[in-house]
Structures are given as structure tokens and as C-alpha cells.
Length: 511
Image (cartoon, rainbow, N blue to C red; front, top):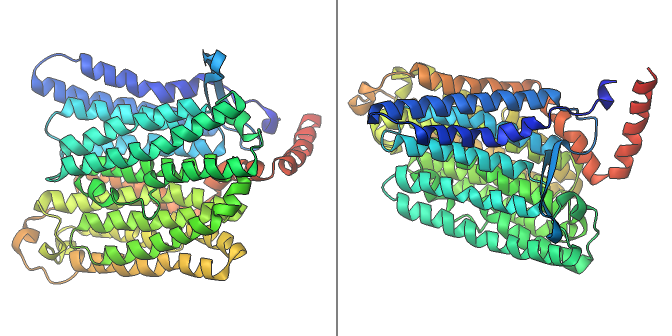
């Protein structure tokens, strides 16, 4: 009977979505001395995000992947006369990204515990608001609601870069806002065109509408530009290096670990799955841009002198692999792209935290300032080696599973596509191992390195969970694949999936 039981507790999704706003309101209402307010803001944000993560895990446990369709669904009339409603719910794909958002948020709050010292209350409020917008974005089943949440992510993310970032934070924040907001204009135009043609903005209804070939092409072009900026897709990446580098580390974690996945998620949900005919037409272009991103970003990463910029370009390179997986238009490629999104979100967050642990102590991110850090920080060196190997795609880590599946999907399209996309592993090994050797190995020259101390309890509380999940995804990938693979199969081949699921359900009922 387990395979046919309904997904219960629909209120869980609302709690996961809006509980961070309750925490943000509690922080704003806190009164007392400046020290009291800062301490309360940190603890309220941490407890709130921790409870949200627990609730997200409960959703994961309650979710039944063998039951196709939407779980934890809620629909309330909003502008019913215009075909617009508050419609939310998750399938196996979106549930994973809700879980990723809920997992990284408390780690980002702990990661900024000591590093963020100015306007702490405002910072914690921005972090909680960002969590609500991300969960809302991934669970939205109405295109207008999706657009509202998608745009709402800009406000807290831009503020975190512009207020708590580095020396060039204002320029970085402005670039991020203008690029993303400008790209979103194309999504708005596509949204209006779809509403004008169908009279509804319900995503489930739009997926089954059957748009004409010409209209599919125009709509997909708009969505590729909109989501290509957030992904980012080459050549729409100009905002990324400055935004990732100038943002405070916890904000860099949320930008690269979750927010960039919103672009890939949008391409999957509103490109590959909603406009399949146009996706086949656009696939050669997107696949080519993905290969360019993989190679171009890796070469640029090798030339960087700032540790954080190396990681930023590494993120850009790996997002190219994800774009390749999505537009192979095969179950293996799409499964690999989703798995790589999740794995990349974990690994890139860990790498940013590792860089922060060193640069915060030394007050510099210049690679040339370091040598032999492993002598002073052996625990960091051990964890950093794991994350470097994961970023390269070493077997036994989550990134290997994702990249392997993407390459399998790419082989169905072209050997050369798989070969060129697979160079991410080779080129990644070059720039990541060069960075690791120059910073952590070599002779201890003294200077700032002599003053370094190993990881604190707070830093271990951030990095150890990330290490555990990285290994978990590599050793037992089916824990995650079994959740979203049925959704991918159903969305690509709905009739075949229903035929396969129904006999199983009948058997269980008879039993």
C-alpha cells in the first residue's frame, strides 16, 4: 500500500516556505541593546533555518516518488478571473532543490557568525527572506507566482553583496541586479504571450497545452535568455566573477550553491519539459555554449591570482556541464544534470567556506601570499582535499555520479560532445590541484602563514556536514536518484510511465 498512499501534510510546504519570514519578523521586533539584538538575530535565524531544514527532511521522508504528479499541493484563488492562482507543490525534482535550499541556509548562517559584524540584524533578515524566495521559487506551480519569487530573490541577494561585500561590492551588486532583472524581462514577455494564448498561467495546464512549433521557439528563446543569465550560460556570465568574489562568503554560498540552480531549474521546467520540439531545435546551440563555458571558464580559472575567483570560475565551468546534461534531452543526461546541480551546490559551498577559513585569518585572498598552510591547518587541508577531489569528479564523490550520467547522455548525442564536455574533469584537475598545491603545500615561509590556526568548532560544524553529504552522494547516489528519476521519466514519457506505475499500484492494492 505504500506506493499508493497519498502524500500527506500539505501544510508542511507552507511551513517550509514561510517560516523564515516569521523568523525575520521576530528579529525585526527584537528590542534591547545593540549587542542583545545582534545575539538574538543570530540565534533566531539559526533556529528558524534549522527547523525549516528538519521540516524539509520530513517532506523528503513523506514523499512517495513512485506516485507521479504533484505532492504537498495547495491551490488558492488569487486572480481567478485572469487564470492566475496561488498554486504550489513539489515533484521529485523540485523537492530536491527545496531540500538543498533548506540545508545550505543554516550552514550559511553559521558560516557568517563571526565574519559578519556590521548590521547583523539586517543581514540575518536578508538571509531568511532569501530562503523563503528560493523555496517559493522551486515550489511554485503558477508562472506568475514563479516570476514573483524569482524576482524577489534579487532583493536580499543584491543587498547582501552591496552592503556586506568587498571593496567593489556596489559595482558587483549593480551588475548582478541589472543582468538578472534585464534577463527576467524576456521571461515576463514569454509569460504574457503564454497567458494571452491560453488564458491561464498554471504551469501544469501549460505543460499539456501543446503550443505550436513557431510559438515554442519564440517562448523558449525568451526563457533561455532569462535563465541563461542566472545559470549563467556563456556569454551571459559577465556579472558572475565580481558578484561571487565581492559577496560575503555566506552570500557567495547561497548565490553559487542555490541561486544559480534556479536558472538551470527554470531551463529544465520551462524549456526541456514544456517546449520539447523547440528544445530539440535549440539543443545544438545550448550544447555548444555549454562546451564553451566548460573550457573557457577552466582556462580563465587557471590564470586567476585570487582564490575566490578561481572557485567562481570553477562554478561557471561546472554549470556548463549542467547545461550540456539538460539539453541532451535524454533521461540519463537530465538525471545527471539534476544530480550535478545538487552535488555542485554542496561542493562549491564547501570550497567557498574553505577559502574563507584561510582568507579571513590572513586578511588576504591572494594565492601568492600563501605556502605550506597545511602545516598550520591540517584539518582544513584534509577537508579541502576531499572537496577538491569532489570538484574534479573523483569516483566516490557526488560530482562523479552527476558528470558520469551527463557524459552517458551526451554520448547518445555525439562522441565529441561527451569528449569535450568531459574535459571539465581534466581541466578541473589542473586548476584545482594547482591552487591546492600552491596554497596548502610547499615550504612554510612564515609570515602570515605562521599566524594561522586550524578550524574552529563553528567552521567544523559547517564543513563536516558538507563532507558527509558529498561522500553520501558518491557512495549511495540512489538515495537521491530514486526521488527525481521517476519525475524525469514521467515528464519525458508520461504515457509510458503511467502504464508502468499502474500495474504496480494494482498489485499493492490487491496485496
